[in-house]
Amino acid sequence: MARIILLGGGVCGLAAGMLLARDGHEVTVLERDAAAVPESVEEAWENWSRDGVVQFRLAHFLAPGGRAVLEEDLPDVLRGLIAAGAARLDLLALVPPHLAEAGPRAEDARFVTYTARRPVFEQVLARAAAEEPGLEVRRGAAVKQLTVQVATGTPHVNGARLESGETLRADLVVDAMGRGSRLPRWLREANIGPLHEESEDSGFIYYGRYFRSRDGTTPQPFGPLLAPLGSFSVLTLPCDNGTWAVTLVTSSGDRVLKRMRDPDLWTAVVRACPAHAHWLDGEPISELEAMGGVLDRYRRLRAGGRPLVTGIALLGDAWACTNPSLGRGISLGLLHARALREVVRSHLDDPQEFAEAWDADTEARLTPWYRETVEEDRDRLREIDALRDGIEPAPPSERRAVLRDALGTAALYDPGLFRAYLDSRAVVRSLGQTFSEDGVAERALEVAGANERLQLPGPSRAELMALLA
View 1 (cartoon, rainbow, N blue to C red):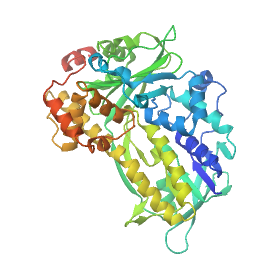
View 2: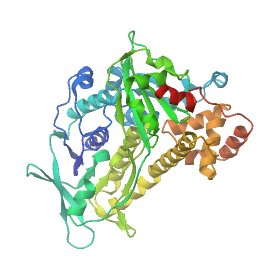
View 3: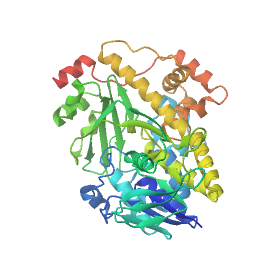
View 4: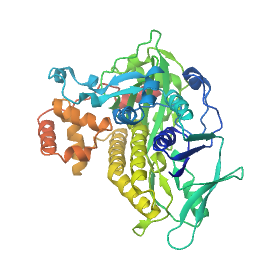
């Protein structure tokens, strides 16, 4: 079996490490952050510092597609998450009452997940990884550079050199360092590249905090978890042990709305949203956290139609990262980790063949999700910018945007289309897959054209300005 190094001990690195170790490989996870894994979820929430994870204490969501990976491939982790107090969430509970009358359907279980705060989720996974035979997790192990073999043909990564001076050899190195991956710099230092990269500011800024109930319950959602309300959106997520997260999301270019960083003004805005004000009825257990400058970024180790380098694989956010408010990151990372195990099983013996297969598999399975997320982000920002300027947002013109918009409207009137809409939100099936099915696009356009687009109530732009004055 192979020696495999994973750079990064976050969710994707640990999950991939466990999957590969269970296939019999000798796996080492190198995590730069030195803090030990806490013994309890309470300690994880109160004291665990993960400097390498910017969003560690912001809203976190395991979509049903990610839950399915755990249930099928890492069931012990899912059991541990449930035992730690994760809340069961069925996205079909969000169905409008008039659609619920149609009753359940086969395979509706695909919309169920379990939700927890990021420190809780990672603590459960990290403790499971620490007990995994064949998997070594080294915390406080900072990598200085990759070791590269250059003879003839394509350069080949064959290990990593730590800042301590130690060198580790491997048959495969996996970049699971997330949004802050240092791989581009290491490749430049090895005279490899440049790698293909597409990068732009997602254009969003986030203001969020956590609450805890006094009786162990969580608030009832009265609409989608991510609800667009004019020039801002409200994200509400049930979590573990009677906790939940409330986040306001808006354009980073809307300077007036940056006043939401003030906790009193943030609270006033949430309270002015009739479908969301009750999410404030709890004890705040975190400060108001803000995050901006979030990139939509996509990388590919290809040049001239060939692998740029062999012996290394990009995984999760190190491959592509997007606006986190759609809650897809962790679940796509778990799906990517599962795909890595499959490609390793079939192609690791030939580095060139592995590089080709891993690129093709990622492009087929994961890249459509990235493209759809970025397109949706751009359309939402255009809508926000128009409303900020007092202009009625123009209807979408590109066919994919037209279909996405139509499905969002039609879902409220047709139980089948509601499930098709949820498939995308649940990271079960991309919109491209959904609209490729016979009749779905036509049905969405027909139903949307015959019905009104409904909106949750919220403050007008003028009322919002008054709240923030």
